[in-house]
Image (cartoon, rainbow, N blue to C red; front, top):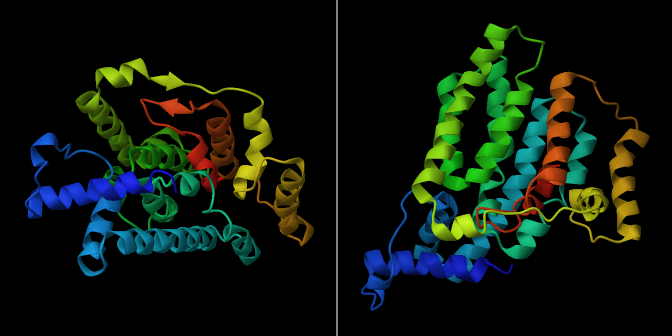
Length: 279
């Protein structure tokens, strides 16, 4: 988990500057609108009992388990077959886990849970204010996950072929993510971001890596065949898709995201690669 030590070090600095007597405190300044606070706060809280190293291990382990459970909850919400749950077990251990993207790993379970809440909103079972609350939580967990899942939710809003006024009412709460995202970018843009704004990393490798990435597999022919077999298995055992626009559109968006999104965005490495676990 390559980046994990520097995340833990940042949490140590936060603790020492505010609650300790840190000799190097004047070397640091704080960006309170940094959308990493959920992961940092959880590890800080647990560390009061266990120390930082064990706290990071416990929080990450809990996030990995929570991610699988959140996907299973989403599967139940949309009445997909239970057989699909077995395919979820290998998913968390991929690019984001290998690189130790702490905040992304901790925020990942919130995406599927947000979709569960939004699905219930579409069915009139929950109030729009709950969707707004989820969006603020997602912002302070991870800005990229907020943006990604707001797009997916907009595509889910196509359910039951709504008229334009009904569609507008469904999407209106999600539009709050636009000023949140744009506002954060404007408030936090630095010259170094402009110099490293995009690195597209385009190539045929994106297509060849798409299926192995579903299951955090290596990019070999053998493991690509394993991925194809895993995807085919539910269909071989009798699972059949229900074809609908609101069902297909999110998957089309995911594939386009993985094929066309920059690899580096505003000095953020591995931008599209880390999203494979949502496929």
